[in-house]
Length: 226
Image (cartoon, rainbow, N blue to C red):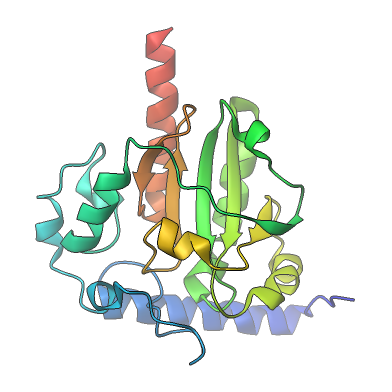
């Protein structure tokens, strides 16, 4: 049985998480956990060097994207990689052990889907759970889904405990073989993507505060086309 933390422990963990977020932001000047954050057993993604030494923010503007440069995390090289994936069909990975309801391919058809690729050891991922819950609730009646993909070589066994402790309300699942890390070119956790109703990647590598802006933009474009 998974036991919930008491209030004192929750507050302590919350404070630790916020502290870790600050460290991440200071270290990168951007957003997200570096792959060196997990235990030593966590393999380093091939693009680790790009994450460890992000380029100056001003270089990011050179990458042509559908949305403003300020919406995205990561350096020029990473954003170039992500830009090449936008407008193309979203990668598919095998997900198992769903919580809060399984989301099938049929369920995703015609929906705007927010993908949160996260890890149980990632403090910024944990601190974004309330925000993810809010997005899922806010847009539920507008054909928008939020899906959390727990993708990492370590820590997946703690997914259920984290979900219950921190109150994840949206569907989440394990990516046992960490296929999403390669398929979505993940070098920072969390990595956010928004998929449009046609199943194509609308935006990848988003800052958390840009997710709703992208959703609103897609919804506005739909309304204008009616």
